[in-house]
Length: 126
Image 1 (cartoon, rainbow, N blue to C red):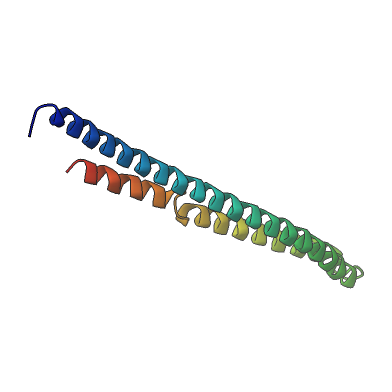
Image 2 (cartoon, rainbow, N blue to C red; image 1 turned 180 degrees about the horizontal axis):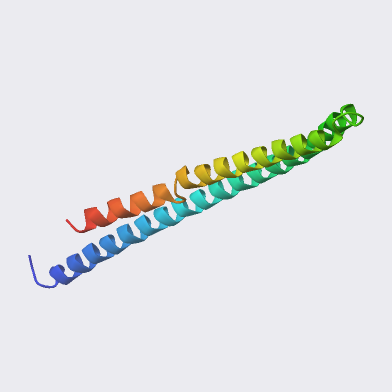
């Protein structure tokens, strides 16, 4: 090998390494973008379903409560109102406990992206 070829070979190697690094970064950015889109779509879908469910449950609770109170109006009106209130309180507490557990146990956002970046770092450190 002659010395003039060596710098050209070195430049080509450096360029190839840089191209590889840029390709890795671009792939990871695409993966992060996909993760963001997936999280947003899940959040949007869950919010719409939750809103519809809450609206329908609110209507059911209003009419159901009125029905129970009207049935017992002449005999046990205060007991009926207290019973309906206790049922609502118990259901509300149960919902909050389930929501807290789900938030605590849900997978972390961008878990796949972070795992891939850690894998890339471990390969680059070799």
